Each structure stands twice: as structure tokens, then as C-alpha cells.
Image (cartoon, rainbow over the protein chains, first blue to last red):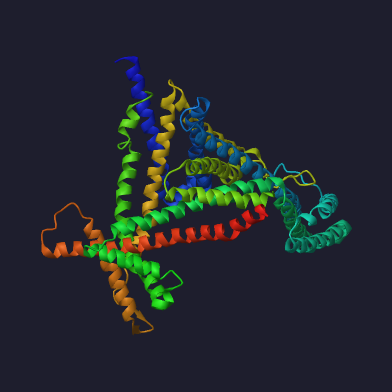
Length: 356
Length: 232
């Protein structure tokens, strides 16, 4: 046997083995009893393993983008026929990726401010729970009073930073907001100022019981939520958000809705040609469609008040039953297909072709 | 022109460009069609990264989920097992060997993995989702509530069951419908299936029509106003 053929044989076996092992995990995870899965440690790690499986699939996203660039980029570079459309496609892709990415990063920085407060809230919970239990082996914890002093110090610093940031927002933001939002901003900012004053005035001596510490933690959490609301108002009028909305609402949503509604026009025109009542089947189909459509429009009252109920019944009883029968048949076929894929029977040619 | 106004104006042009296809295919339509594909292709990878990869994989892997408190202690120790996420990332990267003539077979390992994984998952999905639906389909043929016979609910259940069985019977291709009664069941199945398709068709058309109405409202109310403010 030639070396290339040996290589091909190994590759084929490796592909089949990987295909089989990938399917085996979910197969066993479904069939084995929970006690066995717990003993093996699969139950605890299942969500991580499932995430890992999905991660493998998500890596293919780049392939699509690279292929788009290869196909349309070539057209643009060599000025082939319809290159301008390819240019529009690539421009849309790059702009949308950039804008969505920037919108996400800016959103992250807004939630980060709330997270600082939330982390202090978590710290109060940790102080209380650690004081009531012995620390884990090798973990050294400062005394409770030291931790409380650190909590108060950090809260003061954060509250002061929030105060300075709020001053900047109060100077610049209201003029950019619509009247109803402006009123909301005034309401939130005065609430936040009150909270800042309370936090800055807080001393470790006021946190003598566990309940008081936890209550202060909840207060910090609520302050963080309030602060985030104000920062989000600021972000909503920022240039990044406006550009993002231009692409998302102005183009993506408008084009998507228009595309799908265009299909509605074509479905209706196809129905005009297809629904000529020549057979019992076409009569039944048209009657069902007509009743469902009439039951959904506001004019049904002029025909019969019962039309919405008839529509609902048609959808819930005969439609559900027939669709379920079709689904059961399709699912059985799908199960057979799944087995064929799992055992690499379906993809025989795929695994045989090797690297060619 | 403000960004808000520009958003409405471009939305109207985009809608009109797509509807211009009703007359015939034209460059205006094709331009926006390509733009839509590009925008959709650019939007979803970032969405997946933002909603899945970042919070579920990268944040735990980089230890961003571990909070450092003001006294220097942490909310939880860093979990080094999270670094195992590098394995699926590395394995998934083998997709890109498709571009190498020599190593392209490695990409088939990942494709095989995805096929096998979806096969195993489909097996689980069939028994977890379809079997309860199948059991739930066989409803009671005589419904009683508070000790009294419920005629409407009983008839409804009979119709449901007859539809389910006759439609399933229609799809038996493994034997011929020799007797007249067998043919009758099959024909009933076909008729009931037509009612299902009709209802399905009606719902689909209405969903699309709702979108059409929304677009027309946008054009007539928002867009015309925005264009009016531009002209004035």
C-alpha cells in the first residue's frame, strides 16, 4: 500500500472516531442514570462541556466572513461585473461589525460602574458569611472590623467619584434630553445625590450588626442601579449610540421588515394562482386560510363576531393535530438521519475524500 | 441633519428600495439587498461574541468573574479548569485549515465533530421533546368535568385524534392502500392536512401583512414627516 493511501486511511478513521465520540457524549449523558453521572463528575461539568461543544461551532463564524471577503473582495479589487454591489455588502459588513462592537464596549463601561457598587454589595455579604464560619484552609482573612473599615473607605471613594461624575452629567446632559427624559433625569439625579450624601456620612460604627451590614450592601446595590440608569441616559444620546441606531434601526430593521413583508405580497399573488377551487383539497385549504385571515382582521365584526374563536379553534385543534402528525413523522426520519450522521454512514463520501 | 432624522430618512429609502422589486429587479433594490446581507453578516458574529463567547467563555477564562474586594480578598478562587475552554477554541480553529491544501483534512475533523454532536443531540432531543408530545396527543375520548359530560371538549378530542391518526396514516408509504376503507382514511388525512396547510398559510400571510402595514405606516407617517422637514 502506498504511503498516501495509508495516510488517507488514518485520516478517514480519525474523522469517523471524532464524529462518533462527539455524538457518544450526548447519547450517554441522556441514557446513563443521574447517580452515575454524578459519580463520574459529568453532572457538575455538563454545562461547561455543552458550552465547549457550542464554542467549536462558533469558531466557524470567521469562515463565513473570510469567504464573503474572498468572493466580494475579489470582485471589488478587479472591478468585476456588479462590483459596486459587492462594495456595498463589504462596507455594510465592516461598518456594522465596528458599530455593534463599539456599542457593546460602551455598554460594558456603563454596566461596569454599576458593577463597582454591586461588588461592594457582594463584599458586605462576604463579611457577614465569613464572620459566621471558619475560613477555608490556607485562606487568611482580615478581622471583621478591618474589613468594615475597608468597605466604608471604598464606599466613600466610589460615592465621591459618582458625585463628581454626576456634576459633569448635570451640566451637560439635560439640554440634550427630551422633556420627559429630562424630568426623569432630574428625579434620578436628586435621588442619587441623597444616596451619595448618606454613603459618605456612613461610619464603621453604624454597621454593628449583620443585618445593618447587609442592609448597607443592598443600599449600595440600589445606588449602583440608579447610577447606571443615569449613565445609560447619557449613553443613549452619545454619538456611538446614534450611529448604531442608524445602522440597526435605519437599515437592518427597515430592510429586514421590508424583505419579509415583500414575501407576503408574493405569497398572496401565488395564492391567487394556486387557490383555484378545482378540487376538494383546494377548497378546504382556501376555506381554512380565509377563516384564519378573516378572524385576525378588525373587520371580522361586520361578518361574524365568532370568527376569532373559529380561527383560534382551527389553529389549536385540526392545525395542531395535523402538524404534530407531520412533525412526528419528520422527527422519526430525523432520528434515523442522526444515527446515520453519528455513525458516519451518511457522510461516507465526506470522510473518504481526505485532504483532496 | 440630526442622526435621528437621518435614521428615519435612510429607513424610508431602504424600504422603498426593497418594494421597488415589485415593479422589477433594479440596481436600487440590488444595492440595498447587498447592504442588508452585509449588515446582517456583520451583526450576528458580534452578537454571538457579546451574548455567548464573552460571558460564558472569555470572562470566566480570564478570571473577570472573580471579584477582588477592597481588603484584597476575592469572592472565589480563580478556577484554572476554565482554561480548558482553550481546547474547543483550538479545535474549532481547525476549521481554518480549509484554506491549506495540505492540512485541509483537519477541518473535516471539526466538521465531523459537529455532525456527530448534532446526531447525539438529535437523539436526546427526540426523546426529550417528541415523546412527551406524542403522549400528550392521545387525549381522553370522553371528557368529564365536575361529574358532568363535556360534549364540546369530547368532540374536539375526537377530531384531534382522528386528524392525528389519519394524517400519520397518509404518510405510510411502506404498503399499498388496497381496501376502500384504507383509501378513505388516507383521503381524510389528506383533507385534514389541507385544512392545516390553509390555516398555516393564513397565519403566515397575516404575519407578513402585519409587517407590510407597519412599513406603510412608517412611510406614510414618520418618513413623509421627516422628508417634509428636510424640504422645509
